Image (tube, rainbow over all chains, first blue to last red):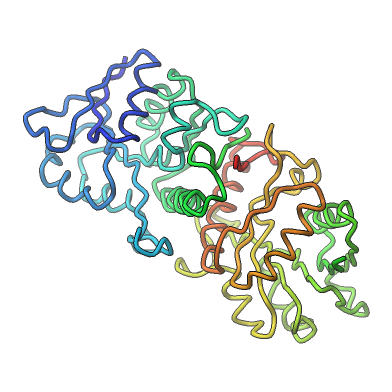
Length: 191
Length: 191
C-alpha cells in the first residue's frame, strides 16, 4: 500500500486525494501553511499553483529527499493566457527536478481537470492521467495508485515529455476559459 | 460551397478529402509531383510531411497568394522521437506563415490521426479538429467545411497556439508509436 502526502488543499489536491483513497491507499492532505505537519508519504504531490512552488521547495524541499515528487502544475501566464512562464525548451517539472536532485520527480495530473478526476470520466471516455518522468519504478508506483482509484494512467515518456504535457494543459485551460470546452470535459484519451 | 485543393495523396490527404466531400464541398487531390495541375482551391491543405514543405513552397508558394493555407504537419525528429525540428518557441505553422505573407495560414488536422478522420470517432467521442490561426474568417470557413463533413471543429486560438497543437500531435504520435494508444484512437475532446 502506498502512503501519499498531498501538499495543497484546493480543488486539485482534494480531487487527487479522492482518487487515492478510492484505491485503498492512504493520504495526508496538508495545507501549505500547515508547517507543523511533516511529509511522510512515499509519494508527495505538489498540488499548489506554480508560483507557489519556490516557497514550498524552500520550506519543505529537504523533506522530499528519497521520495517520489509529483508536479501537477500548469505554469501559465494567467494575465495574458498567451504563454507559459517557463522557458520554451523546458518545463515546470524540469525546473522542480533540478531543484530536487535527491527526489524522483514526475509530471502528472496537469492534463486532467479536477472535475474529471472526481467523476472518472471525460465525456464518455474514462479519465486518463498522463505521467512523464525518468524513473520507471516511480512511474509504475503512481500508475498503480491511479488505476486502483478507478482511472486510467499512461506512462507518457521521459521527463522531457513534461514540456508536451504542459502544452496540453495550457491548451486545455485556454479552451475552457474561452468556453470551447467545459471545466468538466477537455482532452480524453482513447487507447 | 468551398473548393479545396489538397496537396499530398497519402493517408492524411485522402482522409481529409473524405471529410470535405462528405460535407458536400469539392476537392482536388493533387500529388506533389503533379506539377501540371494548378492550385484552384479557396482553401489549400498542405498534406505532406514537414520535410517536404520547403520544396512545395518553392514550387507552388506563389499560387497560394490570396488563399487559406492549412498546415497539418507534425515536425517530429523521427530518428529520436524525442524532439521537434522547429525552434522550441516557434512552430511549423509559424515558419510556413512567415514564408507565405500573402496567404492566411492555419494549423489544423495535426492532432487527428487519419483513421479518426475517416471513422468520425476517437473511441466513444466524435472526432474533433483543433484549428489555430490569426484570421477569424479563414478559421470560420474551415470550421464550416469540417462540421459539414460530420466532425467537430474548435477554434483553438491564434497562430501562436500552433505550438501547443504541435506538442499535442507530438505526444499523440509518441504514445501511438509506443503502443500506449492505437493509431485509430488518441486524444479526443469532450466539450
